[in-house]
Length: 171
Image (cartoon, rainbow, N blue to C red; front, side, top):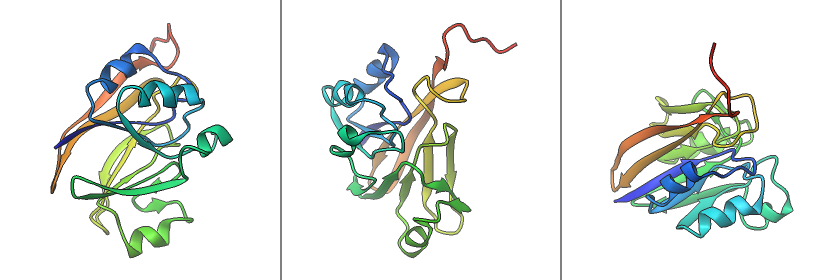
């Protein structure tokens, strides 16, 4: 069993809350829009990091991470990409691949909307951790953590990191 911290859309932002959760994880998965190599360094100094680059990432991040990453973890076929869509509305660039050879776990970022759902057509589990950074339209910074073991995805938790902008309050 492995403990996974899943985040996306940091846009160059890192704080102690993210770091404290990262220190509890066996692996960190990042679904793109890192923003800076400093985010990569901060996380990879803690534990193993797997990830992809996003649409805002420059060549520095693109030299470290691919556009798509498909790998096996604890018996799960995992596919991470930044702009992937979600069940019923997959990105046209990958839709055919998803239906021909669906992974067990499909992860993307980009939308800044936290979403976890099962694809009823393919059976895959879709996850988008929302946005952990401060850039974007989201009001609350979010990420996901869970445990993964052969045949089981367990203890899934949505983590709210606080408001996107300090001092923001819902009225």
